[in-house]
Image (cartoon, rainbow, N blue to C red; front, top):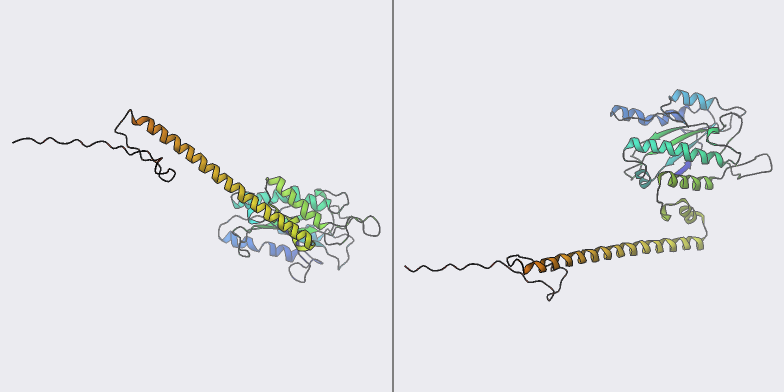
Length: 300
């Protein structure tokens, strides 16, 4: 699962003014899909689907009480499941889209709210999501992802909430609370695994990638060693399973050969050819064929 916060810019992600430019961008894919007769997904929030863009813009742009002109009014968040994660979320595009919305509503927004350490829950967060199906920007066959526009202010338009702050659970000073992005990524990943019953392997976990990027050299080496041992263990299990399957096949084959041998005395015309791939020369059963009848010569 890849989660990132788009940095503010002077273009699409300019967030010190109206959200109109970002909302317009998020709808660009809909026209292409509609022309091809492919269904589209409108904007959604915690409870509703197919919300009009005009409502999104009005709701985000009006929720800016006590913010200065240069303050961020909203934040853009990208949530991109991996190809293997998407496969665990459904078979069709529509099933995957519904699963992404379920994940955003029941896992991500809840963890987002909790990580401000202000006693907030998912109902306190004002956000709108838009799912994209575009596959042209990735080597993956599946590249469905979700964009979120999240208001800087809570639903009550009272509390300022910034996921880009460097404060974490601050109790003293002007800023109370803060935001723990590392904890958000970890909890969002664990919530995904629980929601979809996803068996996440260590190399695809956030903890592994975070350690390999930011951890000390000894810890990185230890993780690499664990990865190698895990791979060797999986190889051994596969080898053991192959041996068990081979033994099972040989036992079954031997049983068939014994049954055939027992029937030779009762029916001398049975032809049985043993499995030469599994038996030695001495162990092979004889091939018994129906004898040819000699024709008697008629004297003329």
